[in-house]
Each structure stands twice: as C-alpha cells, then as structure tokens.
Image 1 (cartoon, rainbow, N blue to C red):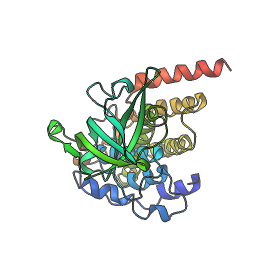
Image 2 (image 1 turned 30 degrees about the horizontal axis):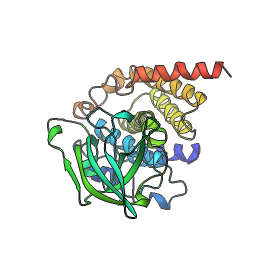
Image 3 (image 1 turned 180 degrees about the vertical axis):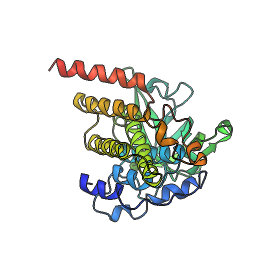
Image 4 (image 1 turned 60 degrees about the horizontal axis):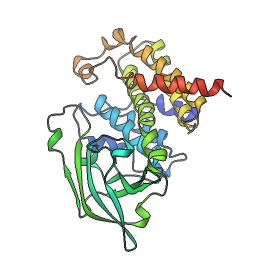
Length: 311
C-alpha cells in the first residue's frame, strides 16, 4: 500500500461502527475476506481495514493483534482468526517451553500445555510453540500450525472468566495431537517469531488505536491539529511496517514514533470532552493506551544507539 492509498482509506467518508460490546468475530471478519483480491494485501493494509471499524480499546487491540500475527506469518489464510500460543507455566521464556514436538511416521505429535492464549477461543488457526529437544544446551523451538478443532486439542477459558474488556483467552491442552510435517515451520521459533512478536504487536496495536481515533475524531469534530497529528503518526507507523523492524535504525524510528504517540495521547483531554460518555468509556482507561512496554522500549532504544555509534 502506498502512502497515497493509505491516505485515501483514512479520509474516505467515516464508516459507522457497531455498538461497544458487539461480536468480536464479526468485527474481525470486516477486515479479512476479500482483502487478498486487492492490490496490496499487506498486514498493515488489513490493519487499516479493520481498525477503521473499531469502536473501543478491545476491537482496536484485536485488530492490532491479528495484523501482528499476519506480519510474522504472511501465509495465514485470508479469513482466518489466529492465536499466537507461546507462554507456559514459566511464561514465554525459551528455556521454559516444554510442549514437545516428537517425530512420528511422516509427521509429528504435540504434547503439552499453553497459558494465556489470547484469541484462542475464537481462532480458526493457532500458532503453537513447541520444543524438538535441546541441542548444545539450547532449546530447539519451532512454531506449529494447529487448526482449531483438531483431536487432542482442548481449550479451557475458565481461568480467565473474570477478565473484562479483554480479548478472549484460553489455556490449551495438547494430547497426542498429530500434525503433518508441513505444519511445522522450519525457522528457529524464538528468533523468527517469539522475540519480535511483542514489538510488532506494540507497533500495530498503537497504530490501530490511532486509526480508530482518527475516524472517531472526524465524526466528533476534533481539532484539525489533532487529526493532522494522528494522520502523521499513522503514516509513520506505515513506514515502520515497511522496514524489517529489527535493525538499529528501525528501532530509532520506532522510538520516535512511540514518544510522539505518547505525547499526543496526553493532549487529548479536550478532544475527549467532545465525545459522548458511552463512547468515551469504551476507551478507558485513557492514560497509557499508547504507552505500554516503556521499559522494554527504552532498553531497545539504548541498544540501538550503541550499535549505531559502534559503526
């Protein structure tokens, strides 16, 4: 998608959005089917299509989450809702991933469990991290494509029943779940997928919020200056999405983007006053929506500048 095409999407007549709490699956379907037939079906293009229909933090976050997964897994089927399932009892640390991937005949068998599978209850396809065992003291991890409903896959949403305003979550139990060799991605899962995921999701999630707020601000008469700043940030996120997002110079650009995003968020108080209370409440808590993972960002920023300074 070119910057001109992006601007055309952003400044098309604002679309109507469903009431807060509407079906999340239906929301995600708005940005999926038919997109592959368009000229540039990138993850960011999909993000814009979805986020323009987001009416609250939940739907904007879901749009960013799904686009981030597609950024890392571009072969994901066009209409599929996806989940990225890594964490276990010790969190997402590579050394703590104990779900096993064992050769069996022409394929493999998965056994283990996962925690905090965001979007898993709605997912058509789950990307599951598993271990082939250790080599030279390092856990050998692969991502495995697991279609929903496969024998041996059980989802348990009960531990998260009390969560409100969050994407649906479930724990996973995998018992002798057979997968074909083609379902196992050959790349080192930590390097190619697990390590970059949170950063990619942070960029796409922030951009999704900004896209949704641009639509909201146009509908409710926000100042031209605020709308211009939102537009500039969305275009900056689009530029970031066209980089590998892992080089020192990429990180410097992202640092500038996140800082400007946080600064703008703190200036939205008067703009929120122009939005009806019911809609405004759907975006609470206001503070921090564009400012997550600040410590990790600062560490990446310092490391990037050190790398650039050393040549």
